[in-house]
Amino acid sequence: MRPYTLIAGDFVATGGMDRANLALASYLARQGGPVRLVAHRVADELLGFPNVRFVRVPKPAGAYMLGEPLLDGVGRLWARRTLAEGGEVLANGGNCAVPAANWVHYVHGAYQSEGTGSLLRRLKGRVSHRLYLRGERQALRRARVIIANSERTKEDLVVATGASPERVHVIYYGIDPERFRPRTSEERREARAALGWSEGRRVALFVGALGDKRKGFDTVFPAWVRLCARGDWSVDLKVVGVGAQREVWEREARERELGERIQFLGFRKDVSELMAAADLLVAPTRYEAYGLGVHEALCTGLPALVSRTAGVAERYPVGLRDLLIDKPNDVEELVRRLEDWRTREAQLAPDAAKLAETLRSQTWDGMAAAIVDLLERQRAR
Image (cartoon, rainbow, N blue to C red):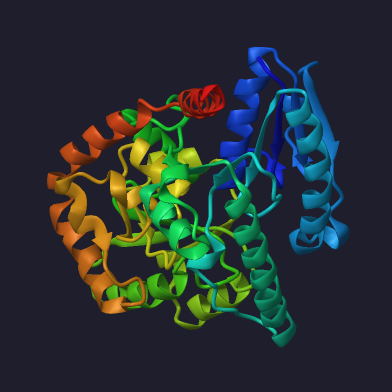
């Protein structure tokens, strides 16, 4: 294959865009051609390939905002070299403005997070948003071809950057179909036993950062408080994630004496096993370009309550549309959606199983092959 240079913050297994970047890099590495990765971090598995070169870019003080200009500068140097060799270059969003391909995982122009925490933290958030927004506009206007992870992302980036719709192509994320798969009843019992979860109670999962309001935990928490005040709500909530607000939420849960009704699990590497043992995923996100965590849950056959505006919601069949949340800020709506899920849980199972089968048919290699095929066809024009 021709030389490929990929420019992104990270190529690791954690995080939606990072996992997708890792999948593409791994696929290209196995094709045997030269692969250059311009990034802050790269998974060890990629470094074992003799045809992979990691161009490490510093991240001062561990801050992506400070590392962004360095990533842009180093990325441009390697992009020019690769294009001069007749190779292909693929950058991520606004991290590098090059006249090549761009893969958009998140549109900064579509959402500005509402800051939480100290004044300094909120100020940093506003400054970084402006910098990312400017870089995004510059990069996408220069891009020869743009890949979006959903139709929602395509629409958002066209509006936010003025990019021509004809240059934007939608390719959905893939999945590891063996890791994220429906489990048998016996496997679910074993998973619950291993985690110490009661067999007699339903479990809902929330998976997401607790550092700002984008993932919507500030809607989930009061909804759960209302439901737990009733004697007939036999569903417990397990919260997976870390962030600046985690201690605040844990303290409030203790003050309300919620006990095991809401349990904070922190960062976990066994999310697939948690999904295997759970009964529902709750994700009232205020902005989600796609939503890999929801995608993973659906691949296990787990129903997921998610905002209707999330990219992954495009994949829902008619039979599961009642799981889509219209107003992620509306606690009352979330309570109603949760009650409806509990009432219709058995009815939703067949449609959830069919969707799992459909989503699992697109592997990470299938996604990567579709991207490479698109770029090679664009090159041949």
